[in-house]
Image (cartoon, rainbow, N blue to C red; front, side, top):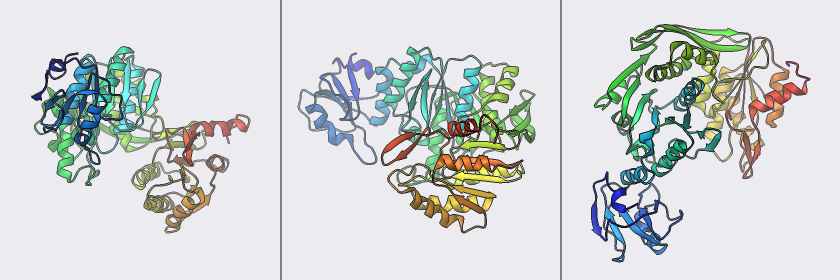
Length: 492
């Protein structure tokens, strides 16, 4: 298309050359393929500045450079000057792929915690009620049967628009996506409208020179979602909800809560434990009134379920369908119950740091298990503090800690386990060490007692184990079932 067509929705200055050129490629990294009709956008990152690579891009054949300042380039190169090249990349990408977001109903979920679990729950809610839905998030992008592993919670704007285009080509009508604060800060989601924007919660996290220098900046970035969406959905229990929604551009704002009155209020919340299944039951009051049961344990499940049902209500899904889906829903690798026995409970979860493990163990304690068994390892080539902290927390909160291997990467599993043991021994909990993860799972199942809750933590959805740069197939849920099958199908 013509360059001026790509630039149509932007403010820009034509520093030199012509905006009537034909452009057939848009790139923002010199490692991408550059042809003779390429527009190169100079992105300034934390480590590299694309302005320094403009001459390299021209040498490879780029005919248009989009930058934030004039660059010394030959006169036959068109230079476009903009205020912010990240914002420009988002607008250019939307135009380059034909504004695919205009043909999609996009649901964006932001928050310090809960984005991934909530997005999967909403995805499953829509999928199981007949919507053609895609997902973009921390773990993966899902386009029908295709699953693409993610490198960022929210992709770069060019990649995002490309994914939207692929989804339309494959018949997708609705998209559920996680929206990180970095994506909002760096304009990855600029240039299109979300039909629904959701805030799960706010916490003092991601504050650093590499992310957000102050909490105020973090808060402001999160609030940007509600200037980009038509309908806002907010957790009113969060102490920063009013700050987030201030100055919003939404047509409607819907609130949900557990601890205060809201448009959708969860009341009479009860934990339930039956035949090896843990979950929650509550009644919705406010704009709608009906009972809800979810077979995913924990008080946080109430918030996730509230989010899903408010979105479903906004999309016109009937109450009976909402109730039915929520009663059956499971999120892969997130407090996922694995049904193997009605005598004890087995679950897998991605908890791989001290904060998430502590939250999960405290939640499981609320179900008053006969014993709480926690099996986990820690990843290699990562902070040793995480190992000490996770070991100490498990030893403090679990009745038995089973220490095993996770992704050792380029470290020796025994060395990682030795670090975990330092933390474990700071508390008085019983423990065993079994380096082979499959054998550790076998031990947990073989020694399970009636009323136990067995948490297999650390890998969750991951279906591999990384050793010395090689990823070998390994999925906790599959190993559980394989071990059960080895016993002749009997419940251990």
